[in-house]
Image (tube, rainbow, N blue to C red; front, side):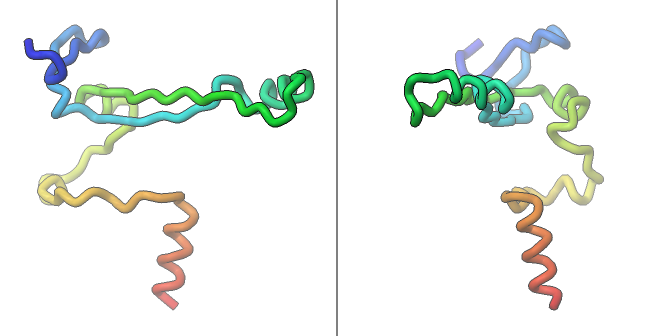
Length: 101
């Protein structure tokens, strides 16, 4: 196996190509919001910002569908290769309402 082109999937115990996987990029705080406030109150440094965790998850196709990372599409819509419009969900709704008015 060439490195970077395949990965071993633990849940289904198979080697999966990374080109056919569902990818998800997660950015999270190291601590949750309630603990973040407590740490900020107890800290000596007032302007210290805790670092974040950056994780890129790779799913095989079956696990991506099962965990709802990607959705099942009809045969005709599978041929559409253009990526969906990205952005905050509220902003998309506002833009659609402005174009309809």
